[in-house]
Length: 195
Image (cartoon, rainbow, N blue to C red):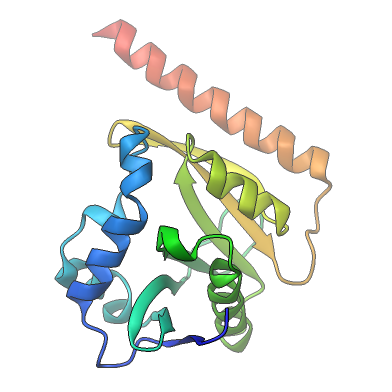
């Protein structure tokens, strides 16, 4: 991993370049039928959702080549697994040629450091339910499934990582997650049946 630098997006890295990396990094997901929301957005919307909302886009550069991205923004909204705000992580992408080389971990470390400096103790991200690779990576590094959403024709799993350690037992998190998942699936099923 020599030569890889992780930093806040410099002006020399355009939002068009970010968009291209997201699309290339998620191309395999698309082939497997895994729909991802953010890679489909145009560059100006990517900016609006990150730096336009006071967030940060971290980039991984191999020399001057953009090889990975990770964004984080503060959300001031309570969710069941904690009061107050949290850091929402998104635009996580690493080019396939750099997968398995620690780039994702270094980008995630930058997101966590940003959250700590912002005074936040939780990070949240969501990914398509079928994105097993991302779910495995996250669970391996201490993320817990806490919510399930159905929107825009696909299902996503919401995961939380507590920077000071999870205050809930693994069993409690699993119970809450399954309760929310089956409740949302049931409501969607009932809505379809009533049509």
